[in-house]
Structures are given as C-alpha cells and as structure tokens.
Length: 300
Image 1: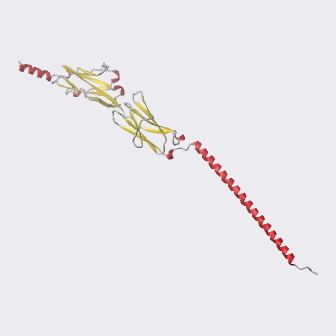
Image 2: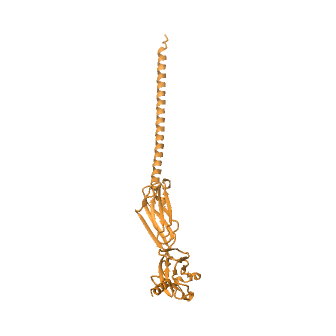
Image 3: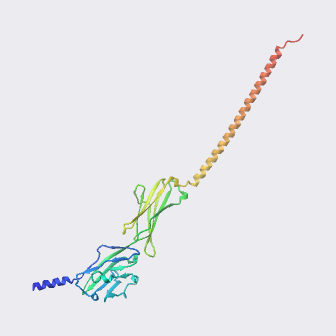
C-alpha cells in the first residue's frame, strides 16, 4: 500500500507543471526586438493541441499574446501590441513559451505574466525595463561678447533621446564634484524619450575647466563633455576699451603739448643767448673804439 502511494506521489510530481521566468528585471533597448524568456517543465510528452500559453500585463490583465488549439489567438490582444508579438512554435514542445516583442517602446515597460497550461496550470511574472542611450552631451557657455573675470557665467549641458531620466554630474578641472548652483530639467517627447538640460553657474576665472558627465542608470553608459575657459578667450569689456582709448588720446595730447612747450622754450633760450652775444659784441666794439680814440695824439 505504501509503495502504491509513493508511486502515485512520484507520478503526480512528475506531471507537476513548473514555469520559469527571469527573477531579475530584463532591460530592453528602445526600438529593438527583445525576448521575454518563459519556459516550463515537469510534464511528459504532450500534443500541441493540449498546450495553452497566455502572456498578459500583470497590472491590467490585458492580453499581450495568446496561443491555444495549436495556433495564435489574437482577437483579445491589446491594440498597441498588434503585429509586434510572437512565440516560437517549433520550440513549444520542448518547453519554450518565450515571447518575442518587436520594436520596443517606452510604453511597453512593466510587469508581464506568462501562463502555461498542459493538463495542469502554472504561471510566472517578470519585469521588463526599457532603456535608450542619450546622445553625446554638449556643453556651451556665454554670452561670450560680454564676459570678464569675476562675472557669473552659466554653463549649459544638453543631451537628447534617452530613457530613463539621466543622472547629471558636474566636475571641475581637479575632478571635484560641483553641486551648488546646478539645475537639471528633463522633458519627454511623444515617444517618451527624454531631453536633458543642466545649467551650472560659476564665477568666471581664466584657464578653468568644467566637465558635464551623463549617466544612464540602466545601461551604465556615460557620456562626457568639457569646456575650458582661457584668458585669451575672454572678450575685453567695451567700457574698459573706451577708457583705454581715452587715456591713450589724453597721453598723446599731453606729449604733443609738452613737445610744443619744450620747442618754444628752446627757441626763446636761443634768441636770448643770441641777443646777449650781440650786446656783448657791441659793447666790445664800443670799448675798442674808445680805446683807439684815446691812443691817437692831438695835432698842433
């Protein structure tokens, strides 16, 4: 009797259906085809007509793909999955009930349940996450026409077409993280993909480097862009330029005036010296004349 009971238990265990799905979330790339793995075991040989496979969304219970009576049954399929799903018919007998999902969208993200029935019934649920890489980030700064050392400058870092939301990190030239005066905005388009813009406000210093690092939390991919602000890149302020020109003009006028004064002084000095020499010559001529007159004897 015990032997018969043991055999019955073993037979029941052998025919117990067991469904296997991934325990960890599956990451699917946006726009590509992905496979949601589901396999079953614990059943002996069976006819395909005895097999039923149902894929549905775990939260809404909406049908994603159905198979029974040896063929796909898609009359109740959620509209957005139309012409985008399929099984692997030639592998069903070997226990492969995986779902092929084509052209993955952001809206496809969520929990999926795989139901399998062959005389007995079992199911498993799995989570699918959607990921899309961002474009290479681009860093800009400005306006360049009105910058001088000590000004507050806004550095902008932008990237496009990614999912989920990006993690943005600013660093200086020494690799230190910058967290103050940073803003991040992320906006999704009609496909659910994000555009990210981060703005860092810094006090302008010559020869300073700033880096924007972009990280996708699902893909682990990171993009980086840097900008270096050099002294040569700074535009001289217009006010200072006009002050410099005015000072140069004043200095030139002063030099011209000094030259004119010096020239007049030199000319006056030369005229005085010439007048003194002429007076001296006249005085000497007069003295000589008087001397000659005194030396001449009177006639008797």
